[in-house]
Length: 602
Image 1 (cartoon, rainbow, N blue to C red):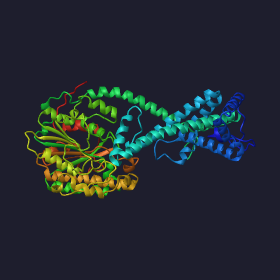
Image 2: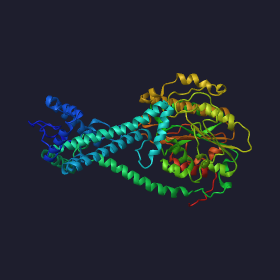
Image 3: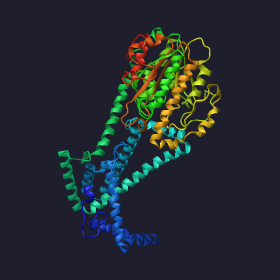
């Protein structure tokens, strides 16, 4: 920062700046002398006074320490003001800038008397703490969710993040991470406040020269800004800190406005008043299964590392299903979420509303907007069930989804080991679904909502396929789990994460297609899709939000209903297959299978 570093070569002893250590102003010097005299009259004060005299006894060491302390303080302030909010931008050249906030801060400090100056320095340090915190949160959210942190919406996701760490790496690690995060924020606050107080003190002691330096730095900043001068591909004149806080403030305001607008939007429904008899008449008598495969994104099908293995699995599945009498059509949907928050993808697909944040999710799931699954329930022609091995606590959304019965992690009879976050392998979950639900005789056909979790990050350890007749209570997976990779090893290795992610998708797809071969009937209709792309470290920083979606059935009349969608034949969507937003799927599906719109206006 020019304000802090431009003066050098002075022959007088210095206090932090390379140059003279000016004597404190009269009031400050007299006050300091009085405090020192009073303190020296006690034994403790005498010892403290003795310790302070080391600067006199070791002047060179003291001067070097002062210089180093001031330089470190300046580096911390500059670093906080210029810190990017994404990992790819975190490069040394990002800090080769002149921050306007540093120049303004120096001017304010120089204009204030001692006590107001101290207050201003503390507030400035706390502001830098807030800036650093939101930038670090932005990095994490951009890396995992493909978007920045939203202060109005995202605090509710932090407990979920802790729960994920607990399920993945253990309760001790999760607790340590939570405590560490709090300690880190407090440490940053203490360090930043100490740094700003230090710099404010040094500037005040060198008021004349610091004022000249601030004037020069301000002039350089204005000139660079006016001329648009750049260095290493970025502007020399920076307002990164103020800009970041401004973006977060705007994001918060827009989120609050969006919430009010979404409440109105969620009450309007194209099929809100459709009579039961006019919903899904062309699927009557069919067992319909909606299945989400965790993190099954477009990258799995097209990325050079994952695509070969996943492509072979899709081709093999297509051929095997064709031999069993099934046909498939596949396309792409653009998910409302990325890298995580799977429930946003589920609810967007089923509701026909764009649900891309937790506030929207809570708003819509607390209302009566018609979900695709609830449309089946509303007809009275289907029994409706949910199979969700990832649910391990109360789940009130069951009613909003229109599920007569929910089978969660504790209802499927699994006695084997967890595979990191996933409570059970997909193959077991599907077999339990068959035993407890799909394979039982009933008076009505079945509509099932199934969430498969084996491809959930961190993709270690991974289950392997076993004989379907060997699954039992899941204990057969004990040895497989123990022999698998450790989550910590995969999390820290980008290449291994991508490889293991691809294998997890292959496993989930194989489990599902083999289950359909084994248990599918002439009346089975399977719709399966991904909920979102994997995290940016796996899918890439510029990856789309697209996920594959497929419809599989034996009855040719079912696929004839979607012939106009122009989807690709088979389980692997072509590169040129149509791409729809995920929230459009509900209405397209309802219309394709004969539903008549009767809008509700809210």
